[in-house]
Structures are given as structure tokens and as C-alpha cells.
Image 1 (tube, rainbow, N blue to C red):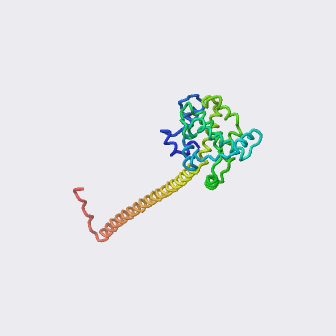
Image 2 (cartoon, one colour):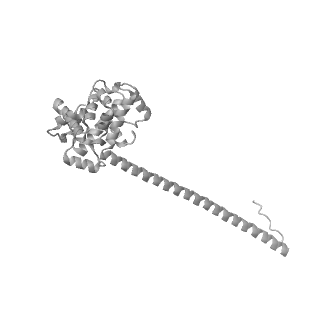
Image 3 (cartoon, helix red, strand yellow):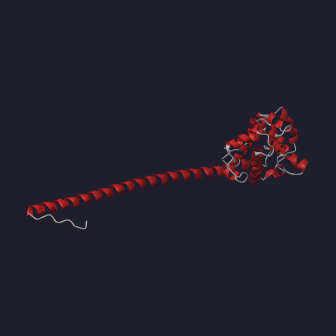
Length: 267
């Protein structure tokens, strides 16, 4: 799956991200290594796609009762409670740092906090018109379809861990959990899915063209073999006719008592 978004990948990586490099990324604790590049790739493309499709974090819809609803998140989880909590979290970067989440400086030192803020605010409440568009174009998308939200519900200790240690210090399986979460979230948007659908269609067309070319080449080979057999048969027939004529000529001369013609001395 990491090789599926190749056109986006080319904007971040100079070469295909092979599995051995992925293995090194999650095994090492390198602030400037391939793990950092992977998180940059996913977060930057998620922010860009979210901006293109849903207007980014400028279109967060916060309602007056969200603070009261968010306080219920400890004991009661519902669509409204989860979205209220995420919507308030999405306003924190602008309230305390002066920038929306997608405009915060993203580098190897801020990555852990940006990742944490994204995970807890990903399921923020969209505007009514965006909610309809999301439902229609993202496959009946609902709040529980949000992959970061699922991670926060199923593995809350992982998200809480980001507030204490950097993402580079996590265990390999924990790093992979975050990467897979971002991957699935990116694939939930329309643009990457359309790209993958088009790529799949082009792949099928290329395979069919290859099969057609292969069949045509086999047909040409068979026709060439048949032509060689036909030509060889014609040559054999001509040689047979020539030998038959020689024999007939010898027989005619023998019946008439004529001498055999002298062979050409220059042969």
C-alpha cells in the first residue's frame, strides 16, 4: 500500500520507498531519517488534500455547547461528543500559536506535537454543506469512519504517549500503527482514491494491450513459420519438377538413340 500513491510520492521521495527502507525507518530512532520523511509525506498530503476538498481548518464548525459536550468524552462517546471534542482541539493551534494546524511549521522537532494535534482533531465537525459533500463523495463517510478517531478510541495510550515522548522513541509496532493510520486516512479522501482508480484502469488497459501485442506477435510468428513451410514446399516442388524433366529428357534421348549432351566444360 505504501507504493500505491506514486504520483504524490514523487513529490517527497526521489525514489520508490522500498520495504527495506521502511524497516529501517521504524527500527531506528533517527530524527532526520526516513521515518521523518514518511510522516512529512503523509501529513503534508493529508493537509493539502483536506484543504482542496473541504477548505481546510478555516471551515471548522464550533457550536456553543461544544465545551459541555467535550467534557462528557470521558464517560460517554457519541457522534456529537466526539466531534465536539475534536472541533475544540482543532481550534487550539490558532488560539495558542496563531496558525491553523495545517500551517504550523512541520519539521523533525515539531512533528510529534503536530501529529498528536492532528490525531485528536481529525474528526472535527464540518460545516453542514461540507458534511453533505463528504457523505456523497467519500462513500457515505461518517464520523466513526475517521481513522485517527478509531486509533484514539482503540489505542488511547498511543496518542497519550505522544504528549510525553517523541514519535522517534516509540516501539516499531507503535510507529507502524501511526503510519498505517495516516495512510488509511489519506486513502479515504476523494483525490487519492480517484488517482488509484485511474491508475488501476490504466494498468488494466496496459495489461490488455500487452496481451494483444503478445497474441499479435505469436500470430505473426505462426504466419512466418507457415510462410517458410509454404516457400520450402514450393522449392521442393520446383526441384522435383526439374529432376522429373531431366529424367524425361534422358528417357526421350534413350528411346531415340541420341547421345547424352556433353556437360559444359566450364562447370
